[in-house]
Length: 577
Image 1 (spheres, one colour):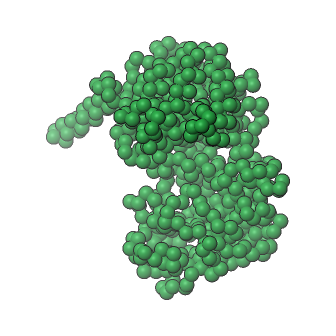
Image 2: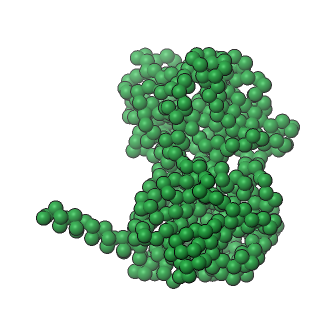
Image 3: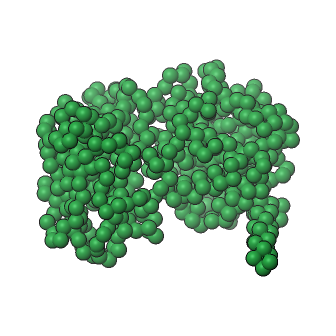
């Protein structure tokens, strides 16, 4: 009987907590998150619009906004945003939801004032959330900002002006659906660490609405988008995993809408997913520039308005209306199914499964045996990423791993840090006194090594302990130029070696010896390592100089991990820049 009483008391306590958190806006008007009963609609058949990343800009000569960062957007994006407002009024939705990056600045009052002025002709409420451009921690201290005493004050002021609640995370009901808007501003990892109550509220809100089909809106994509720049520029894998766990816990979240990436319309099916009963959709941007150099285009316009039609508990359609007059339907049921056992995008490197030896280092089995991979875009014309297991010409066994990237055609430097093809695997640390050594073979053909200043192959080894959210060290062994990987923070050392071309060559990487050479301030034993993560990759800056796109293709084989009893010295052939 006592056990049953304890169970009942625990259940009641959980229910009371859910009610209090889900209704925190009702309990106190000072809360900046919670359920809002006074917005939305009770109609059963409704439509609402989605704007991806408007990023309107302020410009004034002689101010800090007088720059190439703001002026072109002021002159081009702002007029296009006015077209978006006009198109939205023509579509007549009940309301509009943004997925963040409403302004191009970083929380400045002038940018939000411009947004409000441009959006005033909108004939329906505009519900916004914050992206990385809408607020950074120092934004509240900008001299011209009038709301310095209030965190996120400029964003909240703009919300109020446009008919939305003054909240950074909030939910409401639309017909028989429940909608949740969840901000991810700049420094999102710090933001989430400082606001753990947001995840508590989100869990309680979804639990309290578990019988309602739900849509969730946030800024950063939570699943891979096939471009290294965006996958390294966003929330930490631990933050993604925590959000995804809550979103898929109760089975009521059916759609997740994100922005940040500015994809072309045609790229959406290649970077959107189905996962645990929910569709994860990366929306094209409404007014800002589409990244055609990242994601190829097959439509005349990649700016416009997404329109969702709901009928009872059914989502009847999701159509993107471009500013060029096209209507593009997204068939979410045809999106690929995400498998974390393939990509491990929701697993921090310190949480990857690790055994005493590398598995499938000869690539005789499918890559899913031992290795995790990154998501590649399936383009046959540049920008290209490829990952194959080839069966002709292996130095050992019958197969080897082949990785390839080629940048977009045309002249000029388009973007750094974005074309990547890689595999990765963790290995456990059996002894703090041993000397780990990684050996492998590689082959770079001179015909596939074009513009070496823009591309290279690399092998990376990072050290991890489960309670540490970041790598304890990063050693990046680059075949070619020095490489600074944006997804690997300090302590970081990049080493270089001139690649040997047109033949299979050996690499011997003495990990501990290199660590002690370049990180002498802390002992190897003091790291108390639990695992090391090995990455094999090719990397391309997506630039094309003098009309020749950068291109690199590399074979890897015979990858083996061993622990020596004595040091073997620094890795031969590699030097620091």
